[in-house]
Length: 122
Image (tube, rainbow, N blue to C red; front, top):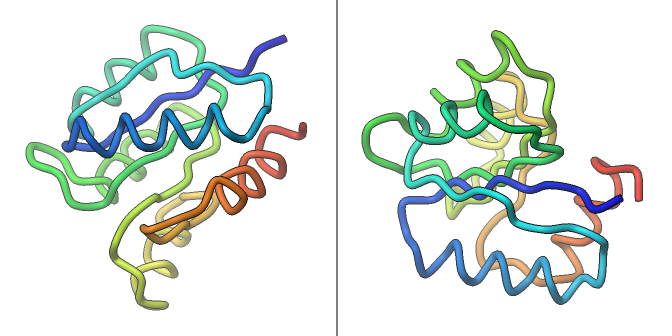
């Protein structure tokens, strides 16, 4: 059964790049939803089944960290922070807020696949 992915990033170009990288993994996944900020992501998460979320940190309206905190109030869907914020302090902050993993941009399809395999159990 195909796994369902939500991509959250204010850059449509970055969402396309992540979609392409997901396809390159060869895993049985589909991007089912995209959101330009945390508020849109919460709506998507609440309106359809999602198996994994890739979320940027810096976005308007509601940033990625705020999204993680809000999402954890009602969902246990795995969340990967996918961001340019590469310091260990930032990664620890995201993990403490409830993110399951942290991946720094730029990333490779192989590093993306490694996170997906662990979090999706594939």
